[in-house]
Length: 626
Image (cartoon, rainbow, N blue to C red; front, side, top):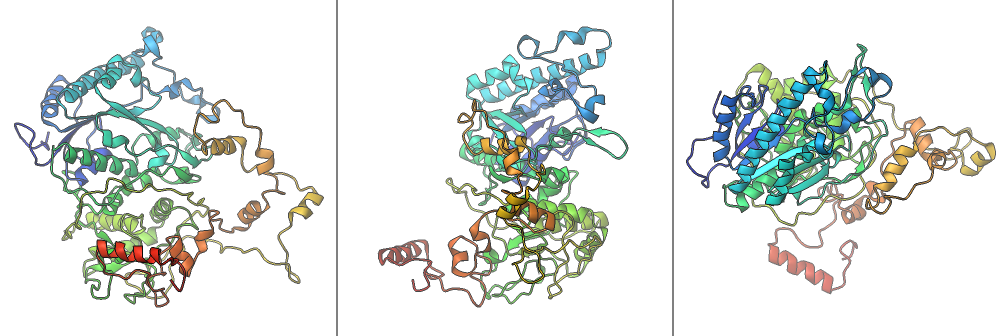
C-alpha cells in the first residue's frame, strides 16, 4: 500500500497532511485539498485516486490508519449513510415499489439497529448494520483523539441521518465542535439535499448555504431505465459536488494557515455558496457534469497549480487566464501557446473565436448551469469531441486558454480544458505545465453572491459558432440545430398577434397545469425565514399561476420557443447603463467605450482620492459629462 503522508516526528510548518476515512472511490474532498497543496492519505475499501483498497474492518489496516492519524493535521471521517439514512422510512411508490428498502435503525434506543434484524432472514442486513456500528465506534473515537490534541476533525453525513443519534458523535459538541448545516444546491448541486459537517474548524461555517432556489417537484422522482430497472436519483447525490469540495478545501486551508500548522499559498479567489436562483432542469444534467468532470475546472478557476497524484495525472491540462487580468493592454500580447476562446476583443483586435461560448449567461441560464450544459452537450457530440481532440494534439502546443470572463468566474474554457486533457491523456503525450499564476492572501470580507439567477430554458447541444475567424479547428456538431427564438409580433396586416388578457377572459380559455402547488409553495416559503411561514398554511395557488389569463406571456413564450431570461432590466443594458450595473463586456474594451471617470494606472491611495474628488464635486459617476 503506497505511503502518501510524509514521515515526520511532530507537526511543523511544512506541507499539511490530511487523512481521509471512507472517502469514496474518487475522494473528491481529498483531491481538492491536494490542489491546495495538502499531502493526502485515504483509507477506503475501494481503490481510489490516491492509493489501493484499505478495509477499515481489518485490524491491521486500522492500526496503520491510527499511526497516520496521530501525525495528521486534519482527519476527515465520511461515514457511508447506507444503513443510517431515514430515507428507508419513506414508502416507495410507483415503479420504485419493487425495491425492498426497510428501515434498519430507529431514533433513540434503536439507533444501533431495530429488533427485527434478529429475526430469521435478516442476516445480511444485520451484518451490514453491525459492520457500520463498528466503523462508527472506531472512527468517532479517532475524531475525539484528534480534537483532544488540537488537530482538525471533520465528520459528515446527511442532516437527518441517524448517525447523529450516537452518543459519542453527540459528545463531539461538548469539546467545541460545531455543525455546519447546508443545502447541496447552494454548493452547485441539482437537488436540495440537506447535509451537515461537524468539526472544530470554524472557517467551514463562515458562509451560510441555505436553499432559496426554485426546484422542480419531480427532482427526487425515481427513473425507469430502458432495461426496465428503476434508478433512485438519491444515488447521484452521494458524492460531493466540485463546487462544495473546493469551497471546503479553501476554507480548511485558511484554518491551517491561521493556526500555524502549515504555510500554504492561498488562492486569491473564492468559491462561495449561491443561495438564490433557479435549479429547474439541473436534475436533467449528468451527475458527473457537476462532480467528476468539473473538478479540474474549479481548480483552474481558483488559479491553482494541478497536483501530481499517484493514479491521476494532470499532465496536459491547459491553464485558463482572463484577458482583462493577464493581458490588460496591447503591450502584453498573447504568447504563442495561448489560444483566445472568447467572443472577440477590440483592444487586442481579436475576432470571435470558433471556440467562443455557445451558451450565453442570462439567456440560457446562470453561469454554472451554462458550463454544465456545455459539458453535457459535448459529451453527447462525437464530432465535437474529435474537433477538441484535434485542437489538443495540434502543434504548437496549446498550454493556455484565454477567456473574456473575469478571474474566478465560471467559463466554458473549463469544459474545453477537460476534454483537451482527456485527449492528451488517452494519447499518452507529455506536456510542459505552465507555472501557476501568482496568489496573494485572501480578503476576509469577500462579498457574497446575490441576485436572482435566470431560469435556464434551452436544452440540447450548443449552436455552431459564427464563421468570423479565430484560431483552432472548427467544431462541426452533428445534432439538429435549435429552433431560432420567435419574437412576439405587433398587430400588423396579415400577422397574428399575441392574444390580450381581455380577449382571453371573454373567450374562457381552459387551464393547463404547468406549475403545481408543491413547486409554488416551496418557492414562496424559501423567500422568507423558515419560522415566518412555519405554521402558516398557504392557500391553493396553482389555479391562478396556471391560468392563461394571468400567465399568457410565459405560456406563449414556452410554446413558441422564445427564450425567457430572468426578470431583470439590466440584462439587456448597454453603454453607460451597462457600466452602471456591472456589465463590462464591450463597455470598456471597444472603440466606442466611454472614458473612465477616474483614470487608469493609479495606486490605491491616488485612486481613492480621485474618487473622493468626484464625489465632493457632486458629479454623477454614470453621467456622460461627469
